[in-house]
Amino acid sequence: MIRKLNIIPALLFSLIVVGQQEKSYRINSPGGLNEISFNLENEKPRYSVSHGNIEVIMPSQLGFVFRNNDSLSKNFKVTGVEKATYDNTWKQGWGEKQNIRNHYNEMLVNLQEKGGKQRKLQVQFRAFDDGIAFRYIFPEQGIVDSIFIMDELTTFNLKDDGKAWWIPAYHEQRYENLYKASQISDLDTVHTPLTIESKSGLALSFHEANLTDFASYTLYAEGGSKLKIDLVPWADGIKVRTVKSFTTPWRTLQIGEQPKDLITSYLILNLNEPSKIEDTSWIEPFKYIGIWWGMHIGKYTFWEGENQGATTSNAKEHIDYAKQLGIDHLLIEGWNKGWTPSWYQNAMHTFNFTEEADNFSLKQVTDYAAENGVRIIGYHETGSNINNYLKQVDSAFALYNRMGIHDVKIGHVGSKLNMKEWHHGQYGVRYFRYILEKAAEHKLTVFFHEPIKDTGERRTYPNMMAREGARGIEYNAWSEGNPPDHVTILPFTRFLAKPNGFYCRNI
Image (cartoon, rainbow, N blue to C red):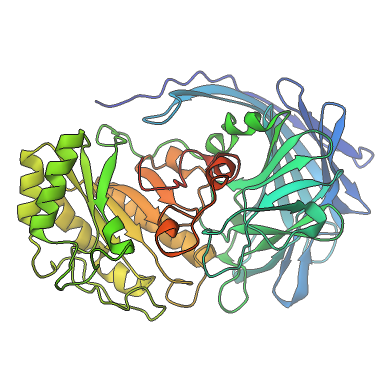
């Protein structure tokens, strides 16, 4: 059935035309818990954040650096401030909570350079009772050349130090690392969500929302408890490529008086666009087992041969097992041509996504699964050879449609995409969104392995079911394993955008 959104809008707008004598502009969250303040300090934009009587973020820098050291961070005047209040409730098609309230106060600050190119820049702030968010809008203003962002100057100048849980940003294992805990001042360059137990007593988490066509951001300590954004670069060092205009993802700070408050926050989802899929009746969460663990422990091989895991007979046995357990889906890795003993190495390995491996019949397996009330999850391992995958994705998804497969898991094993670009740079962000949209066209739900981090896009594309964006259970097969506290840390870090970033391969 088609699920319709029940929206209860309460939208109030006001426009403040700012005179030069006004110095500071403030906005409070609906319940008065959080406050954002903006001002120009020597014609440079600054913002600060407080929670009740607790100062959380002291005046912090905003702005950008373009190519040729062209700074968009000073010599500004405020030309206007627009304020709004928004309150609605939207309904998830699936998830741990059906009805989610989206209630915030907003302040849009319009800036313009006083001299030189006289460029315009907007900073859009939103204050929620569970945190704050802001983003930059660089409007179209007659610029015909490409825009190359070399640095984002945003800082989070924390009033208090604290204990931070983090994983390193520029590591060949992407997000698959054990979390470390240290003082903010001792941080490496780290991924978000970055969760902090502040000395003020607050629980804080820095992240971003609605990451679509931009580099994801990482954070590093810039002296004391000041954090600075570091955009993940392209291979040539440029951070973001765009033309004419750009809007950044939301820079978010979730604020809780206790750590559990972070888990019940829906700020990240609320900052994403409503669903672009009108009929979501085909999107359903489920449990599954898989032909995969045997490969990791050496019982089976991913590739063809004597101990091949993906065979028609083995698949049928697993279908029987799933039926016996009352589990409705089966994942099969290694069903297609291209798997070799060296498939996981950084070597632009080439897979075929429509040709079956020897000893495996996709039709026989899907037919047998349908007869027994089990569905097959398709698997695509790209080996991070994205050029090869993009050439085949339409025919590969069409094959799944013909075989009655409704779900696809897509792997990206390799330290970099195309052995060149970071998974979490602008190239990767564009790629993962493109594949998600393409899957929606084919009515396929998606699990990403070696993904871009979750920034709440499942609100916009609810076929985004899950991702393995954390160190998973397979590490128990071929490493020292995962300590027990790993799974207790994840709900307060990787899982905060909900419910993606799954630890093992169960939904």
